Image (cartoon, rainbow, N blue to C red; front, side):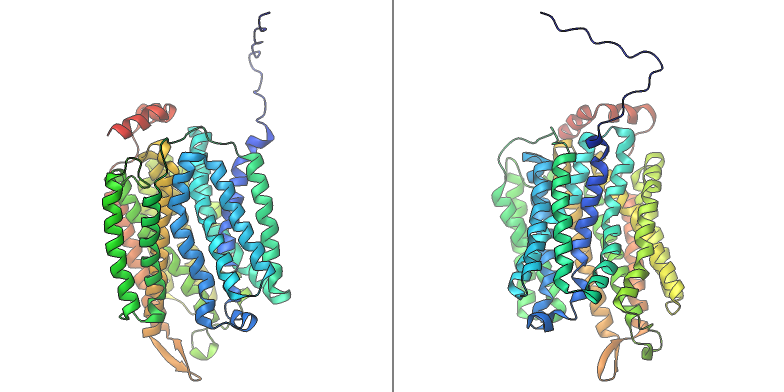
Amino acid sequence: MGHPAPIPTPPGTAPAAAPLRDRLTIPVLASGGILMAVMQTVVVPLLPDLPRLTGASAATVSWTVTATLLAGAVLTPVLGRAGDMYGKRRVLTGALALMTVGSVLCALSSDIGVLIAARALQGAAASVVPLSISILRDELPPERRGSAVALMSSTVGIGAALGLPLAALVVQYADWHTMFWLTSALGALGVAATWWAVKESPVRESGRFDTLGALGLATGLVSLLLGVSQGGTWGWGSPRVLGLFAATVVVLALWWWQQLRAERPLVDLRLVTRPRVGLSHVAALLTGFAFYANSLVTAQLVQAPKATGYGLGLSIVATGLCLLPGGVTMLLFSPLSARISASRGPRITLALGAAVIACGYALRIADSRDLWMIILGATVVATGTTLAYSALPTLILRAVPAGQTASANGVNVLMRTIGQATSSAAVAAVLVHHSSPLGGIPVPTLHGYLLAFAMAGAVALAACAAALTIPGDAPSGGTRRAREAAPGARDEALEGA
């Protein structure tokens, strides 16, 4: 018995609404990105009190931040590659689950060793954004892809802006473990929502996972970031730091050699060395450096004692609220970034964003005494960050085959992470060098803060210059529409290039 012929839809009839699961894909992925950024910042208000709460030294407590940074940097490209090979939703759900397990462990323990290990588990969530962007590329039509990717990129700033005041309120008015129970519940909800609302992408890369390449990259990155993050504490000329940097050079050189000879490398270095991809990674590193100084310096500046002559003496809650307008701005400006990229190309959006960041730091240099000017300058920097961060994944999407989207975006996020770690070390070095005693305690001078702003602004201008050197990123007119309509043909062309 034959199957009945389909009944055609009458002319003028509106198409059926998309299923609820399909309509929730973007909100669920975006909420995962926000939760990841919140999880990275919630421990910050606790840092001054953790030595008392855990009985550990301040240097040991700092590893609750360092462990997350190191684990995130190592796991982002590794999990991105795993997603390309074994399924992006599967790996994304696993990353969120590890983050949730880490949060539960933090909620259950006051032992500093357990807390550091748990925070390392939470670092796996750094891969959420590149994996989500890759899923959006595979699942969405071209006309919706740009705005969705821009929103996904902005979740990093939105979550960071929300996480600090939220965590400060919980720490101030409740037991500090309550904060981790709250994030555990949100994490479990995120895992369930992702598994239910996000489809598994059919785009896969074949072959065996490059375990040797993953171990080599992990060793090199840990050596690099450990040296950068601990240089101020251990001493930049100490044998430990110099040994770590020497190990970085040797290990990454061997890793590069191995990747060029691997049949299915963890990172396709031939793709990375193409100007459109490589320069995008350079711009990501510089933008990460410029962006991160804003959060670091603003928080310290407004909390500085009034006796310094410039400080406002604000609480950690009030400090978080000062950064909140920047997070709201990132949410509001992400659609604008997508429109600029659609009309002018993501290269121009990236350059514009970096220029706006530099303008924000110019405002910070002009006036860093009045609260409204501090908030305005920080918000302008956040606006530029939105434009730049939203453009970076779009550049990568247009330059790499569909089968390498998650791993390529993972490398791009890694470069941002290295930029942020370097920014943290550089800002700390500037502020330590330009300090004066106040009540027997060294406190950064206003000149030190202004130098940090100038340094970050100069790096933002370098990011703008790097963006403008990226080869043309968007074919015009019908050519672009044809390539977007047939991504498979474009990916085959890229692989054959």
